[in-house]
Amino acid sequence: MEGLLAEGIMLIGLTGRNASGKSTVVSWFEEKGLVTESCSDSIREYLREEGINESRESLIEGGRELRRKGGSGILASMLLERLDGKDAVIDSIRTPGEVEALRSRSDFVLIEVKASMDARWERAKLRARIGDSIDRQTFFSQEELEIKAKDEAGQALDATAALADLVLINDGSIDELNSDLEELYKMLNY
Image (cartoon, rainbow, N blue to C red):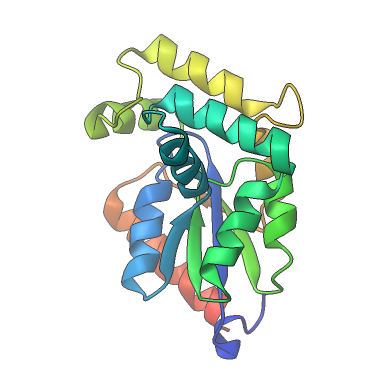
């Protein structure tokens, strides 16, 4: 990882459980000048083309369908084409195949954003995103389906997290997260 920014190119990928703070981290890097993308953007494009309304369930099934057709790294491959070598931070990396595709760029760094179950549930309630569960039990039941893939087309959060180059713990305040991100940015800069 030494000297990534010195080369003028950086590709940062984020993985982590639902409501762990990945979107907040993406926004922080966007303020540093990195382009933001998400593997889910490839799914959203597919859903629009198919005339399917976006929901958490349709995003999951759309991703499964694209992976069945194009392999486990297809979402990342589609994203890399859109990026065309630009500095970027990528949200929502959910399979080892996506990590493998992104590692085709030598400047790729995968960061797992971790937060406790309680912190994630509280954040999910506060953000009230379309598709987020309205009760705690459903929130964590849905997550269980994403942790380990049942087949090559499924999400595999645990296996993806195991490939992370760095882990960012996000159980504190936004100020603590920003401080940690500053330290991380300095580390990536040297």
